[in-house]
Structures are given as C-alpha cells and as structure tokens.
Amino acid sequence: MAKKKNFPLRIDPQLYEALEKWANDEFRSVNSHIEFLLRENVKKAGRLPRKIEKEEE
Image (tube, rainbow, N blue to C red; front, side, top):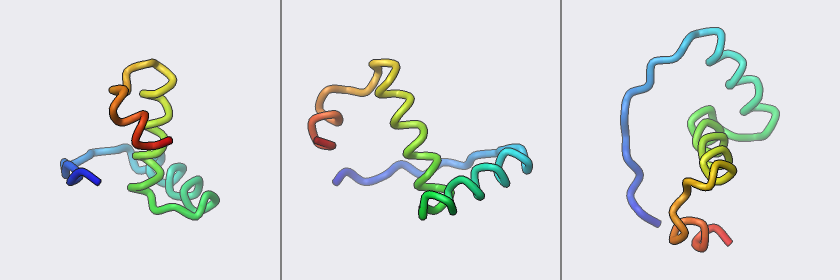
C-alpha cells in the first residue's frame, strides 16, 4: 500500500459531529470514513485513476 498523504482539514463542528456518528454506525474512525466517502464519490465521478481502481478489486 502506498504511503498516505497527511494534511490538515478544517471542518464545521456540526458536520464533524454528523460524520462522527455516521462513522461509529459503520464501525470506522472519522478519518477512515471521510476517506471512504471521498473515494466512493471520486469513483462515482469517474475520476479515480484506473491503477487505484484495480488495486481495490
């Protein structure tokens, strides 16, 4: 697996609370849930590089 990129993220506290509850429902950390949501939407938009898509299959 490639090394993950770290970056700061400023987010509205109410949005964070909603994400935190959702992540808990899915048995994920908030960080991994945000990554999951971003990846799913990037895939849906057809913007995920093919190499990464194949690694996930």
